[in-house]
Length: 382
Image (cartoon, rainbow, N blue to C red; front, side, top):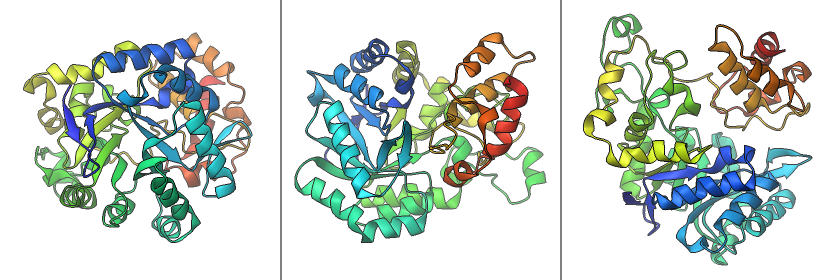
C-alpha cells in the first residue's frame, strides 16, 4: 500500500481508503470482516458519515483495541431522527449526534472533523459566519477533532472552502463521469470521434481549478463516488457507453492534483481486494484514457443516482437510494429476477408509498428526478 500526505494536516493516508457507507446494511460480523481485510491490506483511513446507530456501533466494535491505527473522518451535522438520516445545522441536534458518533466508535477524538455535505454557496457562507462553525472550532480547540474538513459535491463550494484558510481538507466526489467534458463545444464533432486526453485538458474548468487550488494551498482531498455508485463498471449503465474497471477508476482519481485517498465502499472482503489490486496493477491495467478515447458517447453524470442517500429523509419512510439501486439492477435485465422483486418487497416502504413531495429532489446533489424514478420502480418491481 502506498501512503500520501493529506495536504498540510501532517497525516499520511493510504491511497485506497474505506468509505463505510455500504457497511450500513451488514451485521457486526460482516463489518468486522471488511475492516479486518482493510487493515491487512494496509488501509488506514475510513469515512463514517452515516448516522444510523447500528453501523456506528458495529464499526466501533471492529475498531476496538486498534483505534490508533486508523484515521477517521467523522461528520458533524449528520443526525438520526425518527429512524432516518437527517442533515441539519441545528446545534440542538448536531451536538448529541456527534457525541453519539464518538460514543459508538469508542473513541474520544476524530482525526478529521467533517462539516457535513455543503453543496450550496449560500449555505457555506451561513455556516462560516454562524454558530455552527464556532462549534466546530471549539471541537478543534479542545482536541475532540484534530483537523477541520468539509464534504461537498459542488466544485464552487469546494473552491471557497479551499481558499478559506480554515478548511484543511475536502471530501469531494471525483470520477471520469463527473469530471470530463468534451474537449470542444461542438458536440456533433465530439461524437464523431474527438478523443479524450490523459492531461487535464478534458476536465470541466471549475473542477480543474479546484484541484489546482487545493494543490497550491495544501488542502488535501479524499475522494467519494470514485466508482459513480458502480455505474462505471457496466457499459449499459456507464455514461460513456463502455465499462471501466475498479483499477481504472482509482487511477483516474489518484492522478488528480491534491488527491490523497479514494474512499471506496465495500460489501465484502473480496471488494476490498479488488480495490487494493490497484497497488500491483501495471500501466496497461490502469489505463483509462485509451478506453475513454474510443467510447461511443459521453454524459456528464448529472441526473444519475449514485445511491449516496443524501435525498433522505423521506416523509413516507422510503429508502430512496435502495429503491433506485434495485430499479437500476432490474432495468439492466431482460426479465426482472425474482430475487430483486423479493428484496424490493421486503422494504418497509417502497416506491408505491411515494407522495411526490419533491423534498428528495431538492436535496439530491446530482439532480436525480426521484419522483419519475419512483414511478419507474413501481412499474419494474411493483
